[in-house]
Image (cartoon, rainbow, N blue to C red; front, side, top):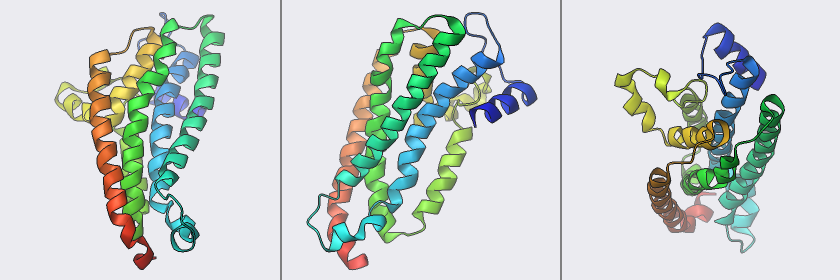
Length: 224
């Protein structure tokens, strides 16, 4: 998919990142694109699985005393593991193409952390909704596809016209994708203030999601 996206957006749509170290080759385009794909995959893998987490583990609801709230945590952990593998591939590719790695890459876990918290909160909400609204799964699939094109995965934020840029920035993936590229590709320090605000908001949202899950779980058995 990375190869296909690189071909379509660099050759057909002529997207450009401005070059890494003055290089605007296809390999460098793919590396920058890969960062956005890693962030997007981390988010979309969890939220696409979340509505079916309880439905696929009915026995845990009806027959076993089981802490159902850990199912979204497990799904998030699995997605995070996949992202870490992809991140390793990305770092290896960047080192091979450029001959160096930016020391700022050590901040990548701090950049991804608030997104993980936000995603976990959303997973709790969707896991609960998936019990009562069985079509949520199909709807989420559409939304994540839309988010893929409304996030700066295939293009830089600077390519978005000014009148639409504020709308793109409201996408919760945009800030994380941009910050991940700052530390991994451009060698800049992250926006600590922005990360702090994002982390606080994500923590509040995750707490709300957990509370909603715990509130609705009493009705899971009746619906199932």
